[in-house]
Length: 258
Image (cartoon, rainbow, N blue to C red; front, side, top):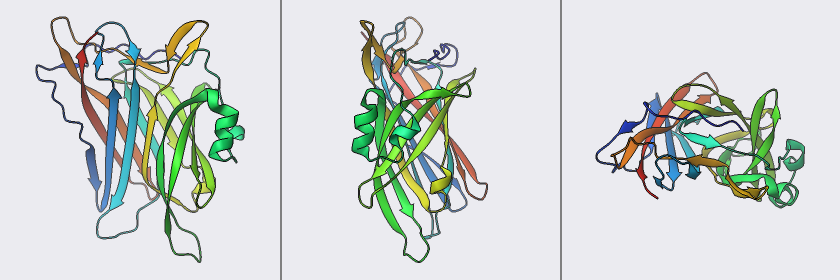
């Protein structure tokens, strides 16, 4: 996978690096979205990328007990200071994990796992009262399709049993946010699934041809003499049925270390 463009001037140098790990909240009418993103570890080399994990999470609710509109699209843009690397990492295809239980997906594609998380789904079916399902999420290194690298996120619930796959397409671009992960709610889920929460952590280290690799790496690119930096880590955009869109950005800090 191509490297994200190094970030220099876009990073804001800070004398105080005590940026609290707070979520960002956006509102539109009675719709409220919350976005959270973290980079770990926060202490990184200045000039040499080191293995990191990146986590993203979103929550969706409404005021005054209004019905939550269906979340149709998720787009998460990651700061250009990172490097994504899947050299030698096996891939998994949708046909191997859908339809499949979480256990079967792991058995078939365990070498392609690059992350995990959770999803909460409100289920609305005809002739039934609505109910909520909490499901696990497994992220797999996907193939390249139509020139775009894919991350396949299997959403699986044991009770009641069910699964669908969120296919994240990776798009590379210039600027502050170098890689965008975007997905659409699959058509088979649009008739019943209303997401109220998702979280996903990308974190995979492996060895290929005797060399250590990390799915995501980053450096703390603060100028010489400064102990660290504050920078925009990620930007999330959500699209809902009916045409509403909300966008929010998370700012985080890093420290220069060994």
